[in-house]
Amino acid sequence: MNDGQVIQIEVSHCKNIYSKLFNLRENYSGSECGMDRFHTPALHILGIALSGLAALAVAIGIGRFAFTPQLPLMQADLGLSLSDGGWLAGANYLGYFAGAVLAGRKGMPAAMLMRCGLWAVVASTAAMAVSGPFAWWIAMRFVAGVASAGVLVGTATVILARLAMLGARRLDGLVFAGVGTGIALAGLVCHAGVLLGMGARALWLALAGLALVGTFIAHKVDVRSEAFRSGISMPAASAGQTSRGMHLLVLCYGLFGFGYILPATYLPSQARLLLDDPALFGWVWPLFGIAAALSTLSIAFLARWPRTYVWAGAQAVMAVGVSMPVIAPGLCGLAVAALCVGGTFMLITLLGLQEARQQAGPSAQRLLAAMTAAFAAGQLAGPIAANFLLEIGWPFSSALWLGSAALLASSASLIHFTYQKSFTRENP
Image 1 (cartoon, rainbow, N blue to C red):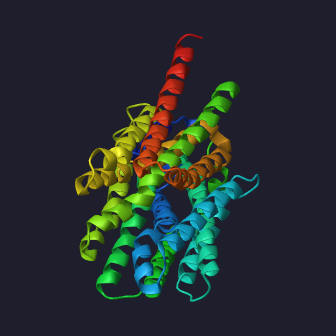
Image 2: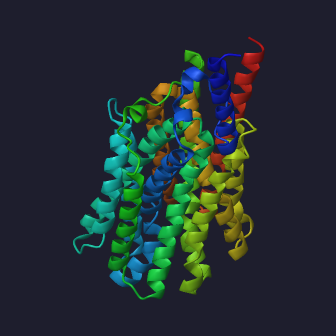
């Protein structure tokens, strides 16, 4: 055996050891991944995932959800009414929809969405501490919503593409654990601030400081590089199947947003009525975030089943959670509802966006944006539908049943389409 053959065998042996040590190898072809992953240190790959985690923690955990634990303090400290809180939440939902539509425009760089969105979250969070007319707060919550959607689409496009290129799709769950991490950290900051006697404005500045730290962490990875802009090429289905599959994903993701927003909007206020002690209630939101973070880390254990089936099953669990306050009124029912909803909503988000990347391939950014816009539209429609049912004299439980029905309809559609696609493949 000559020296060239010996060197070739040793290099191949080292590659196999590398793959086994870091468990990063999946079923990717050489043309898909090239040699990039063998030239990239494992710590750098982990750093890419952590930058995505930090980005989503800032954008969603703070930009989207920090208002939830802040609302009771703003009511007590600044005289904010429940109706005012609803307008601020609605402005954020509307901004999220607008940001998703903007992110789907042709030629919009995903890396720019991610970077600019993070700075916009920091600025709009700090601006909530500024005294001014109520319209100022409305504008800032709208800006935070726009930025959050941009960061979500940008991160899902850029970071997940890079991890896939490096053969590290198993780290997708770590990236999306950032949402639950951000929710938990924001909840802990607000809880600690209440116990220390801090005011709402001071806490908004503290949250802005937390967002700033996360933004610096997210910027550690250069997402402007050519590798990040190009993404990877993924095999696509036939044109008919792809078009139908994309439309179905958008519809099902919108139904998910409709069913999810009802408990996300009303369960905290219901829990607040049952838990008079602020020190006890203050732990509810951090625990919700921890459940969300842990759920996405389970994605590696669920990979043995078809992704759409897991998505459908998670929505069925969420449907049970949405209906629990009706089935078992009281603290126990709310606890089960929080566990079912908190433990599935980010898992469904991750599964949906992964499926979008699989369906759309190089055109994933536009599909990701369309799905995010559908989710935002569902979020806007949920409270409107609930208020309409209340106006015509129906009990609030009817809105929860409607949310459960939307989730189950989405699950049934996913299962039916996946079964049909499998049947067509086996019987051409």
